[in-house]
Image (cartoon, rainbow, N blue to C red; front, side):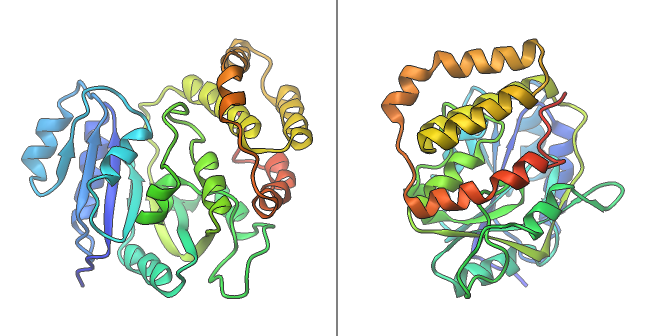
Length: 298
């Protein structure tokens, strides 16, 4: 059951064992997707290990850690209509890539399909799944699942041309909540995003991670997205909510300071979303406030 419609893109940095496990799982998929790995300047022997164990994988080595922008680099090489992202500690279940491609084939106004995330080794659902399943965003009758206001890169198949036209991941955001800005720009371009409960991605979180850096980037990038795309009143409301609810420590202070220092850039680049796209984001505010999966801790 080979399926030539989707290329899988994986970004990695100094997580060789996890990456090799992911590539083993991807190589076992019945779809036999082409795989592109972007090695973000690993110093643990990642590149030679991949070349030896998975010579069929296309390996890109930009020479520095590009974060999420490594995905943009890979998508330039993609020749399939769809691209599936996964992290070096996650992998797609058999049949999920074909199922997502079928949905994208069937619905030409659909840009992304996000799958159910199962956390390993226990096999329980990620807490964010319930939010995706019960998304309050209304969608057109033809949409095959709940409409979403954003997506999770490591669990999503995207239409390659839509990704490119929207500009991909913004280089300034680097990594941590980088999807929100791209999702909003896809919506502004008229695309729809959906969740497919019957498709699965497995995630076995790596122990090699800098949770405090990820938290700082998450807060900063949330602020930047809010200031770049939301109207003034909702932007102020979300900024104040973050200021009240994030941990009051040096990590949060640094994130707010870094975000504020870029205000000249924000004002130059600010482009408020069209009314329909803003409506989708506004409807998500309540769910975001109550979310158990959006805690800026660590």
